[in-house]
Image (cartoon, rainbow, N blue to C red; front, side, top):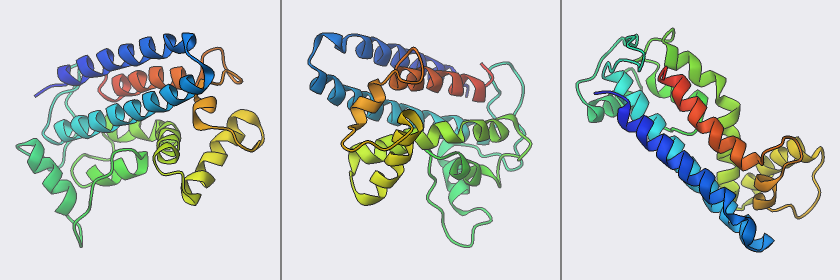
Length: 200
C-alpha cells in the first residue's frame, strides 16, 4: 500500500483542470464564470477523495513517499477497517468522518495516528485553504443564507468589501490580489498540499 495512485491522480487532474481553465478565455464571460464554478467543484471532490485515501492508508501504516514511517498508535489492516476505527474507536457514539476541514480530519484520526505524526501536524497548515475551498463549494451547491454568510467573508478577503451581486465564478477568476486567478492558485495549491502531506 503506497501513495503512487494518489500522486498520479492528483497530478493528472490538476493538469487537466489548469488546461481547462486556461482554455476558457475564448467563451463569453458568463460562461467562463459557470465553468470556473464547475472546476472548483471538481477540485473540491479531488481534494476530499485524496485526503480520505491518504489518511486511511496512513492508518494502515503506509510509508511516506520519502520512505519514513508514519507514527500510528492503532494500525488497521485495511482501508475499510481504518474508516471503522475512525467512526467508533474511543467514541461515545459513532462519528461520520469529514474530509474537507483540517480540524475535522485531525479529529477523524486522532485516536489512530499519533498527534506528533507529520501528516497530522501538516494538515493544520492547510486549514484556511480547505475552509476557503469548502465555502466556495457550499455556496455554489447550496446558495442559502448560511453559505452566503461564509461566501461574503471570502469576497471581503479579495475585494476589501462586499459589493453586491459578485458571483462565485467572478471571484474565482479574479486576479485582484495576485498575477494568477484565485482558482488557478487554488488548483496549484491542492497539488502542493497533497505532496506536502505525503512527503513527496
